[in-house]
Length: 191
Image 1 (spheres, rainbow, N blue to C red):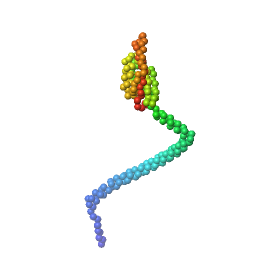
Image 2: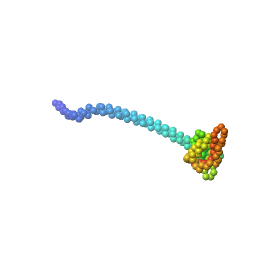
Image 3: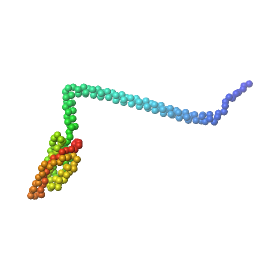
Image 4: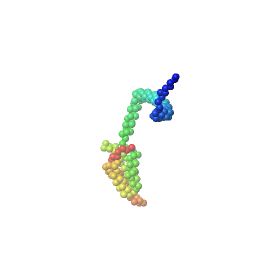
């Protein structure tokens, strides 16, 4: 006689629930694993690309360092060193420049009214600063006085001194006024 014994137990709701979700979760896990693998391969390739760029830049830096040393060695030769010193001296003189004639002319032209014209402009460098000499010719006294007032009110000039004033009488025109004056230039930065 044969006895059959069934040792199986009934599956619970929890076991049936786990078996039902096992396949979808396995698929999701497989897709996630493939995505992680793809990301790892992509990052690996990017790493090698960045490493090759870094190697290329390092090589370029070494080449530039070598060229710099060669140029420095060439500059340290006596002939080039004297040229370098002379160029440095000239550059220092250029940086010490205080006033340009074009900038001075621009500043003065802003002060001149339409009835007055500038006939002469000169610059001297005594020890106490820069002195500018003006000669202007106006159609009337009012224009010249306006110029003098503008010059006195300007923040670029100080110590205005009139050195010469003439009234010219011509038969066809009323009297023209010619004036010569000096002022000390106190403007900051003339470039």
